[in-house]
Image 1 (tube, rainbow, N blue to C red):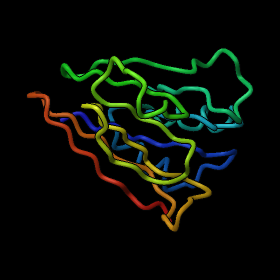
Image 2: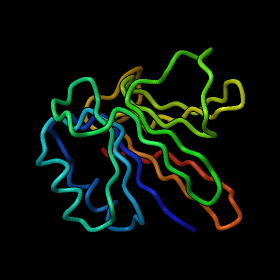
Image 3: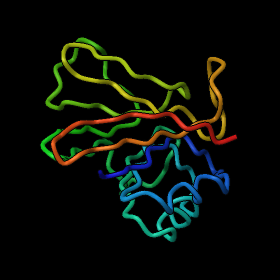
Image 4: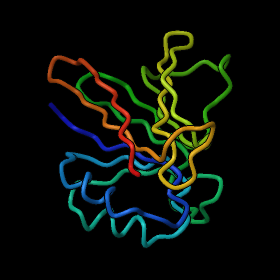
Length: 148
């Protein structure tokens, strides 16, 4: 089982529990609004490879707006702001941040996942990250984890 720690919207803050969780990850995916590069550096220091996309509050234009990945035959798209629901997508799973609220919804055959927000959650949600689990046979698990 591959374990990916997925987080978004750190906004210049990185609670210590996030780095503790990251030690148990095979990969870390950050879905934008890092806001300060020290957050990325701290995540990279933990050890697992970090993949990130640029959010609307990020000013590092070397970071991509969209990142397409394939893991165990599943096509993922990482981007900060989710596209409109009627937009055709060439992926199986779209992971996004921006709303500061968790999401697990399937639209038009694409599963939209949002881990919520680490520092400033929205819509009554607690601060959270998510674990994305991928088994060798292509099964996927998604589990929100409160980071209070």
